[in-house]
Image 1 (cartoon, helix red, strand yellow):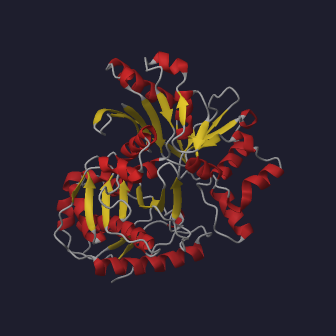
Image 2: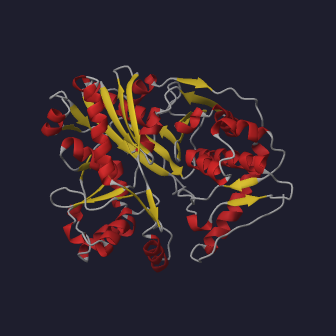
Image 3: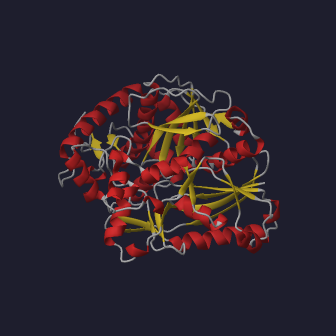
Length: 482
């Protein structure tokens, strides 16, 4: 059996799959997030506490001896610092933590570029060294996934894709900082290929009554695993995986890599599977729908969304940039925008605009991938948001492609399992993706092309304006009647 520890932005889950991909165990715990003046953190102690609770529960259910392989997959760009004794000396600096905002803006101004942002890990290391009282004790820099790996194996290491994010060596910054003795490269974890096997720490094995021969298999971060776990088994190389959890990932898997014109599209290569993954993530997904619910004072719930959507007769357009947009490089300070607000606009109009906007943003990413010459014949949906069937139908209508829903919405954990399967059984990608089961989303064939084109025009105008005011301390709020 295969155990996946999946740490997301809101929870940590332990999921066991058998050799044919059936989920036979699942346990989850919510993780607290602390937000204070742009600092977004989680507790290292909570990670240890809940990881132990998951393994204790597996032991109590007499499943621990049956586990042959273990891996972890977590959110990317979440940073942690350890001392020489490998004890944590900080909380987890989360993705979208804003503490290096001023530093990134100063660098961009100095270089007359726009290449640094608040998620650059090197800048957060610099911030820690300058501002933390424990800076002299720093011996290891790693992400949240690497930390879980360490707790299980007793070793500090990372995979190549996570390492790339950790170093994020824009402008050759790491080498320049190393020459000035501001950062030592030795503090970063050793890097290995995805699929590398490690022994599990002997004390960990004894504590939780694990099989002494069980192995830890290195996989990678959540967006990549989720793309693999939500592929289309019939047309795996002509399919977009749209994964909506707290955030949304839109990616395509290909065997042949072309030189991309759009530099904002990320390329992640996995030699183990002989594939390349192309696409990006944004700050939408379930987080947007949850925000919409809270923004409207909890007047709606997930079950009533369809009712509110259908009651709308208005024509609002919402650019959902309330968290910024990593892919479009839109600063979160500029905020979201509502177009077409009129005196008779109502709650129903806002709900409809919010839902459509999430679909339009994913469609924008899909179109950008297609513009690189990739043929897209289908879309598969997965992630926690897919439990709202009405939103799946709306997305399918917006995408105007055959759209399928993954039977296993936990596509991140499932993709992590599939990578382990490929390593253990020496299988190719086309073999492991046959474990993915889907069903086609039925739609009413409503045409959203006109609305989508208008949305793109508004988005482009906003983006151009956003660039001109990016470094000014104002918010851009535009209201246009259509």
